[in-house]
Image (cartoon, rainbow, N blue to C red; front, side, top):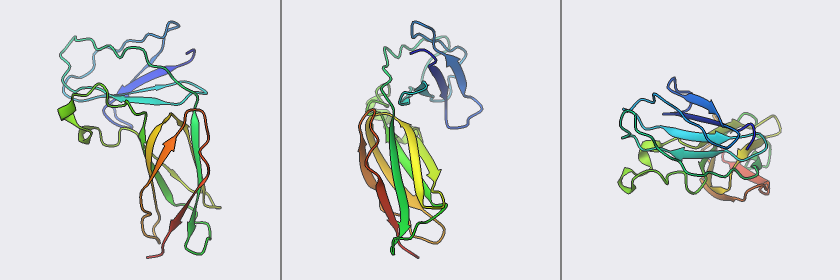
Length: 178
């Protein structure tokens, strides 16, 4: 995909994050990654859904790791509104989406589990003055959605299935007063 980029790092905003542009043939290479941490990979391009993968943390110095062929699909979006029990919009609520492509842990050994990759595909946005929120650049997969605000109890988790290239029907999240 023309204009695609690849980045890797142990966590969001990490100082150990590394970026590389994808070559015309779709290949990329990174060098001199630290061997004492487990990295994750983010593959993205304009007008495509973003893919994430957890990488094993036990790569030896100089070892290569082939991700194989990864295909970016059309992006999806999640739209919604955060309201109180009376249906009034809640501005500034934190809406958190956790999840992603179903195969994001395909490169980890079974015993590693997902706990070492907490936050791997964690996205958080805030609702606007009308209580509206949008989370874009999503790939097909299963996600868990929660919301919270200072004056309201945290909303129960909702499981959402996202289909590639589609905008999910708008979701209304009701927060109860504390």
